[in-house]
Image 1 (spheres, rainbow, N blue to C red):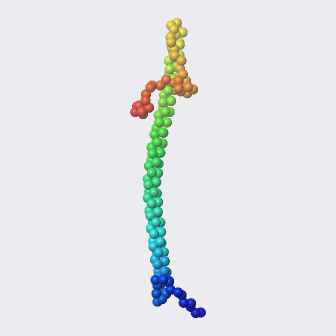
Image 2 (image 1 turned 135 degrees about the vertical axis):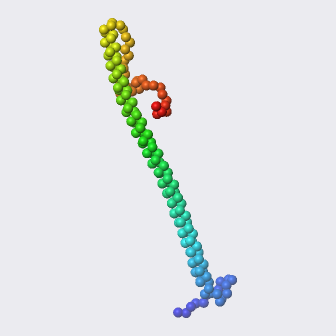
Image 3 (image 1 turned 45 degrees about the vertical axis):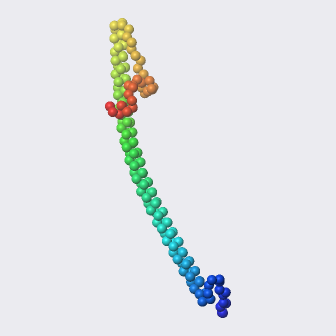
Length: 142
């Protein structure tokens, strides 16, 4: 096959015809290398950013877990204290009932009128149960 001579483009000489495709190929290869390098650098930066975010999220997660653990412990302590207070309230209610029954007997025997208060049931109507007016913070300091 015979090669067809090409017309030279403006600004090029006839002797550099074979160099133009090689020059284009070389520039394209160089451009591809630079593009690949930029792509690798971009990917590396993304990996570093994600690694940093992972570290920050792990630290935040650990802090949240510690906070949850502390709150769970505080809840258990408050729940235990609440159970103790309920038991004490029931015990005191029973003692007050016992004292009121003694007062009723004394009232019947002596014939004197005594003011015997009605005892609310703290389990049925806890909002009616008389309790000291302590701020919540003071309750934990006792």
